Image (tube, rainbow, N blue to C red):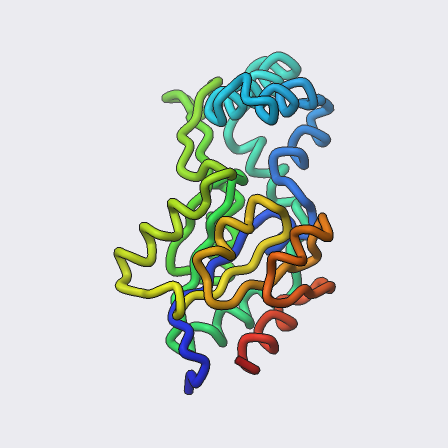
Length: 218
């Protein structure tokens, strides 16, 4: 029985559902490339997020030539995940709470995690492929990391769920946009102290069961 009043739970992926802060950076390290120049350009506003995504993929192609999508998925299979994903999402579903991923990370990883946790919806960014299922220097931006609130507000409107019935979980300042439209917010292993101060509560640990305990207290 759900006495919390919550009907929607929104999770960032990288650093929250995974034990690594960035799925993109995880792939960069495995391939042996550095995207710091592209990251700086994006942070300075010199390139859009789509241009940033494309420039990241170009790094892989320049290093390796042809890159099958299966190769990137094999790397993503190595991303360490938090404990308790399946159990926590199952408990939330039993409480009648919809669950969603809203992430600037790679869609293929979000799909894998969704298969584990049976999330209601996943929103992340897609890398495009050609007819041979090889990656190409292009993608589809479904989530601008700086405007996650747009995805959340659309989700709430479609589901008929209010901010007062929503809680969100994140780990970086980009997730504060989610917090602003949620009655309750959890900074899970936050990267910055300022981020934690924007949340209802801050938690440290490697098990999503910690999040469930907090929600059941509300």
